[in-house]
Length: 428
Image (cartoon, rainbow, N blue to C red; front, side, top):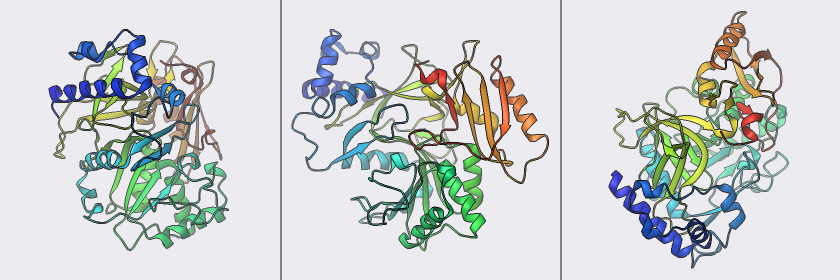
């Protein structure tokens, strides 16, 4: 969609949301605005961004459009994992979810045969429990208990990843064999952990069908990607998904390995200090839905940062290319005033064949501790060399690197590779 067409579609969404949702109408009126006031891109910036707390506070009556309830046909309910605080209840129309997914996945030709006409892929999910959409994803529940209405099977998973007992890992591997899926929806860190165990147990992760893997939920680190690719081999299609539970697919990794973002089903902004950033500059993603008749969102501040790159990709897709930077609440804040994104930290770490897992944590004083779980490939100079690189990247804040045998998950059950107690206390 061209810039002019996309903006006109966004203006229509503003008018629809104003007329049909109580929350957004009040949001505009409280700021002295009416849809007729929004004539160009500069006017669009006059609308203060909306955010998760708004939709959490007003859900469902204030954000569902007139004529809809949670029991209306084709309405699907979702609950976020609560990464950045309280969990967010939301809803989406099934055909909007499918359309956004199709637009995103179309950038990767290796996923073309997954969506055969008239078929529904058999799907298994291996992700943090709070992302499971079932009451209990632990190994004490049955396969039937963990099968969603759409047929997706949620594999047994522990709340604290590294504390997972062997019997539960075996159960997850057994369930994969039973289900014979076409598609695995995974958290990359969780799935890399499963592959390490599978290798140790002499097990394979495969299917008599053509198996595809989509990663989401948290930042896919280079360490996790290395482990996944090494275990699954080059023949299995693997793609990193950009998404949010309340919006569905926002983008996907193409078959050339670059991340594209969906500007066909959304009007997108990358914002810093209230203004759009230039290409090559990191900004927070603001999303305006297009033709969403259930829960229209206008200038929805996602809390996720990206760098729009602007260059064409030889995969053939026209969707814009971005670099994933990670969540604002997890970025490292330096005494110099700079911020270093989780994506930038991960670039410094690299694929690190000598470690299995890592977490960089910034404490309330600003000091950073990098903990890692080593493997048998570690050499004497690996950790000191990494400490030097991290110290340079995070200067002037102090950095300490230490090897450990255990790293805890977050309260949500997710494993975040970069956390900052400073950023978690407030926005950048």
